[in-house]
Length: 97
Image 1: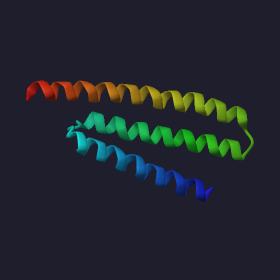
Image 2: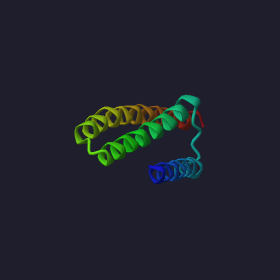
Image 3: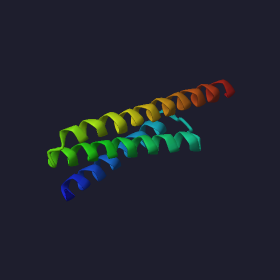
Image 4: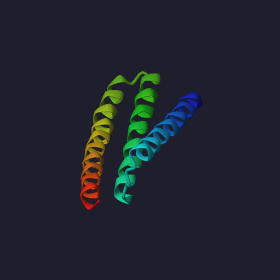
């Protein structure tokens, strides 16, 4: 179980490092709701993976499927809303220049 937690921590660092690098390369300024969405999406996705792996290890496949359905869908919804907010903010920044 500690190996799973270590792996999820490493994935978290890589995801946030990739996102910040992408933001710096494209010179995008994110508002605090956008940052909150990025962090919440990352945490929900990692929680979904942790739930899935722990349920599979315990041989609870039905719980793994339900967790994937509920938490994964919630992560996709938050991701979509965050993406829409970032695109809207980027377009308004481009118009202001």
